[in-house]
Image (tube, rainbow, N blue to C red; front, side, top):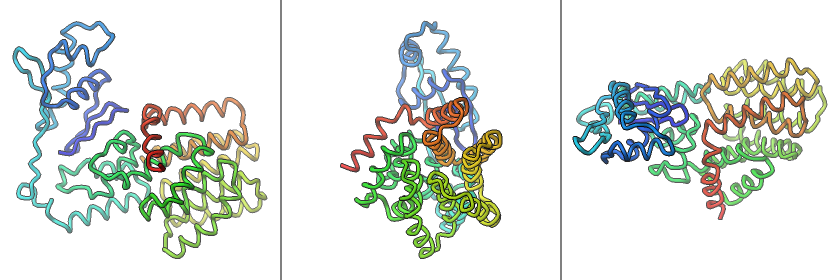
Length: 383
């Protein structure tokens, strides 16, 4: 059984069902889950789950009762009472052998599911991808290795990416690198990205994405927008050679940001914005790109002194990205806002508002808590 445990929102998902728990219920479940099969007395659970608190023994029994009730719809997940000893958690035994669920051995179905996930990925519908991934047990298929790593990235599961022992680090490295870059200053991230490219440590598709797209914003927000503009020639050439048409809107949005920071003429920015808004996004109305463009356009309005309209557009863009379910893209937009405001300070209230949203997003993803472990992985790969 595929089970997803969301420690940021206190949710447990399995068999297409999502159970929402209260914080202490979740802490108790998480402890039992990490130690599945082991039996713990009330006193041990009080010590592990309620440290430095003064609950009574009945507290454990009450929480066990509520947990059992909430987890009951998930077949096979059981908290057992071991008379005279305490409680333990029994995990479902997977019966998804090929003889039990025939579709697990059907390559055509797996190709169909991969194509459907790819379509949702194209349209920027992260929530749709996540819903489909959560239904593996019900629909009788298994995520292929790429999406098994990509979906935790889309949902901002940094903890899962760091500790996903069933996937090689090389397959996870680019996604970890992105969270590393977006959690600190562009000046810190730029030499790391350049060295990662020079050493060719990333798989070829990820290397190309970093080379032609991701590094553009790092250059721009590190105060080197001219380097970003110069690199765009390489970006568009590779996009044309490899027919990466779906990269064009995001690359153009990064180009718009680079010209904005570089102080390019208003006419040039207007022309590029019109090409994105009335051309690219009309042909490819994808949620990620729409949200990202609104944010960068909001920064443009801020530069023009249109404060009210700028804030409205920034909020609209972030709302679209939240609706898309692509957590890293929303983090990227907040990163753009915060670092743009470092280069071009807005009114203090506006600066504080988006800095607070950025910090909240980092906390939600777990970057604040896992920053040391994340940096250790990246520095370790760079030697």
